Image (cartoon, rainbow, N blue to C red; front, side, top):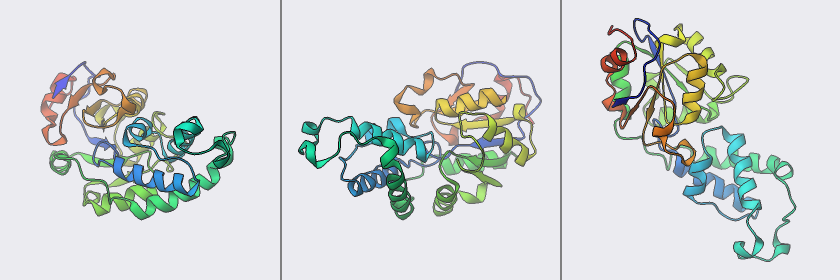
Length: 254
């Protein structure tokens, strides 16, 4: 684990807020399957993992709109079909209601089937809870998808709180979800460690006043995660060293 910069001086971590997609579970396979089933329902071309990996992280609404925008910009000749087979002037706003309903149906059916838990995630959660931290899962995934996924993967037992992207008025990278989660945990933001995989998590943490640690294996919108303004990076949650992190960010060991 490497620490890039100092955080604020407080005396300990009381809690941790942990992202889900790209941090605990590799859900890219679920997204790709559900999105392609949705696109098939709309008679639109498929998308691959590379495209989807750049678009995930900002909630289902943003993901669907971004995928629709991507496929509608593909020239008909590259789709392998005649222009008349698809209305190239159809905009995302018109297609979105049908796409949303289709995606919700398909994602519910595949949720967790193509989504392995990252190596070290289970051990990392046990480590954090063993250190006495209160844990919450905060994700931009809808709560109705997040809770069953955590349960199916045996991760739900670690969390006292689970908040999805529909739990609050705004999603990450807005700081509101982190501040509300800190309230629910009864912890001060400066003593609450945010663990995620992307600039979304880091920006939200910075704005909320939380220290932030990023995993190196997530999605981060297709950009190198080590270029993100964070307090540290770790290759596995099992390798998190809280005492080292506290010392190097100005926090004293518990």
